[in-house]
Image 1 (cartoon, rainbow, N blue to C red):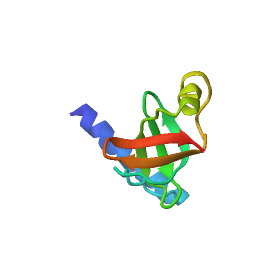
Image 2: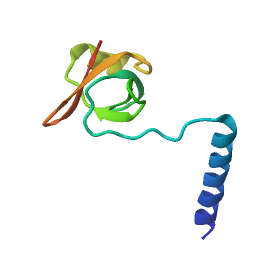
Image 3: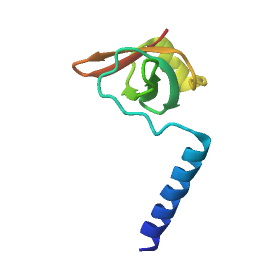
Image 4: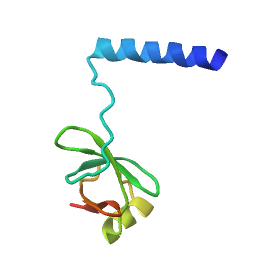
Amino acid sequence: MAVAAFRTIRDQIHARITALLGAPADPELVIYADAGRGVFRYASIVAGRLDADDSRFLATSEDEDLVALLANGEPLGARISVRSTEHGNRASLR
């Protein structure tokens, strides 16, 4: 019960701050991405946002340069291209 009450209060505070700042709601997560923008999170998969409408996407990569950046560099904000395939979205460095 206390956890549910906390979540409700947290959500209400978040909504008020968002309204005050004029910040947009969380963008849509798209399944098929054919565009790109920049990496905003990374792990074993890339999470990014599309230039067209700021919607979010998930992708994997076999691009050697992007894989090296994910493993050894700082990929946040890196410019990537994404294409959808029958096996999921694939990302590569631009």
